[in-house]
Length: 78
Image 1 (cartoon, one colour):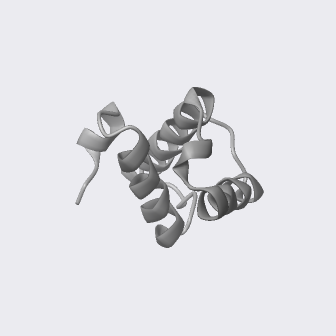
Image 2 (cartoon, rainbow, N blue to C red):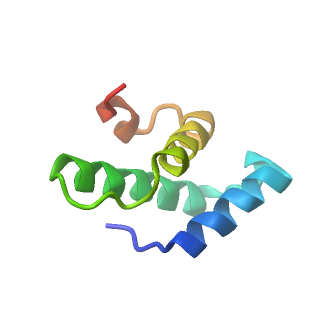
């Protein structure tokens, strides 16, 4: 389980918008995958949504770009 706050996500997405995905190292990509996993689990369990849909969609978009073979991407509902 990853630990994140909305502030973490805003900083992360701000870096992506400003510098592109080339700033993502392996640690950040693993963290991103963990965030998506956590959001999916909360959704599956019908818990409170962890992030707004627009942010979740952007996170998935970034993950698809930097790690298209990430296992969590095969588990997404389209």
